[in-house]
Image (cartoon, rainbow, N blue to C red; front, side, top):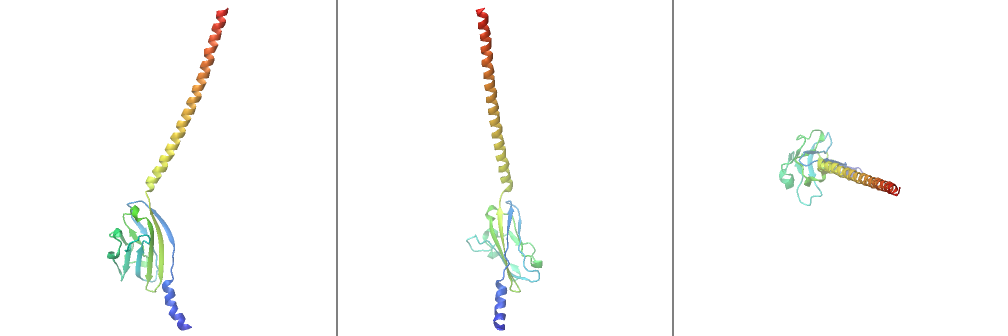
Amino acid sequence: MLLVFSFCFPILSLVSASEDQREIKVNPGQDVSLLCQGLRDASVTLLEWTRPDLKSDGYVFFYRNERPYENYQHESFHGRVELRDPEMKDGDASVVLKNVTFNDTGTYECRIVTNTRQEIKHLIDLNVTDSDHTAGNKEGLVTIVLSGIIALLVVVIFCICRNGKKTQGHYSYELPAEKTGDLVTQ
């Protein structure tokens, strides 16, 4: 029994994982930190940042043997991804993605393997949106709606005033004519 336990324990520790998922929103052209935290008291032996939704080979960032390997990166990430802390102190395996574009929108997965054979995974949903443009669209929509309401009110007021003048004109036209008619008969 002890033999089975000592054989299975390293395998269990290798596949144990901590997964959480966050969402980050950022504007195009900005730099963004993709956070990934490993164990504070263990050194990182392997770090893989991937985008599972990309159908091609290549990593967002790849680190092994105490150094990053840019030649394993997907071409769209060349020269744009670096470790936030090159020494990865306290298990910080976060990366900085520079000059994001709309094409960077997607789910990013960080996978850390430590010297204790611990595997940790983190998921991040990155949403690159032009929030200033979206806010402008909302403000523009409000302006259009308010302008339409004001225009409608002007038309309604104009119609009410026009009908009131016609009614007043009709009575004022008939009254003098009747008086004129009364004067003529006398």
